Image (cartoon, rainbow, N blue to C red):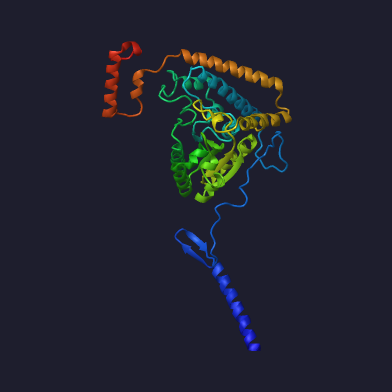
Length: 419
């Protein structure tokens, strides 16, 4: 009996040791070392708890106790707020101009002002920007004037794109802001390539690309994240997850926990941020920029927000979401009001200055529009310049056809066009 019991004990020990050995056994595969498990277990498709969202200011503009954030001094805070207010006023004026038939198209940033301005404030002018079409606040922060915005929207001779782009397709070499493209997500892999070139040249700068939740449904997003992770490119991916890709809600776009978990899947450091909290956005982008440059790594920031405005002037969002929901976000979760409460609590702002700022911005914008309308349009023949060093045959043929059309219908075209 004693021997049998001893054997049983030894067998149990051997079994436990073998199980422990299997559990601890590691094999070095081509992709890296992995630990083995005797248990048949799948990775859950949906974690029990969603990824946390970084926040500094509560809805009343008060610092949340225990918040870890990057300090913002009075001068920078006031410029951030002034630019957010300017962006609101600009959106209102240009939206009205489109409704009056003075420009053909417009896109607002209502509800997303903090993502625009706070992220821009955390960057340097040497950082390259690859925008989508809802980041005019970044250009505003960098010094793009109201007149330059108006010139582009009206497509006049002073427009840097020579009237060949849709309104709001801004671009400025001076401000390291690449020209907006309507096609969704194409700017994301371009940003990674630019970031890789900065790394190879040992530049003390990074690349920042913006896109919406709808952009993450495009293949370009996935290819770009993988490329950036493998090449260790200093690029910040800032996703404005505003709940809607035009009329498609996020629930119809993906089953994952938003966008932030996709970064982890590709080996990209990631964070989820309250996009309506300017201090949180500033702190997250500031820290991400430091990591991207000093550690040679990409970073994904998912900024949770809500698109209060219509997708564009071609859209009526009340057809697919309730008006009460839109109004609640506009009033209760306005990022500009939240940030104003914080600067007021610091004694940096008051109502009289607010009224003066908004009135002044409105006057400046109306004047910029009046000036832009009077500037003549670009030369028709500029349609065929700049893209190619030597124009291809098909483009030269199109130019000949246009000249013939102008010659047949001279009253319908500017008189200064050479034919």
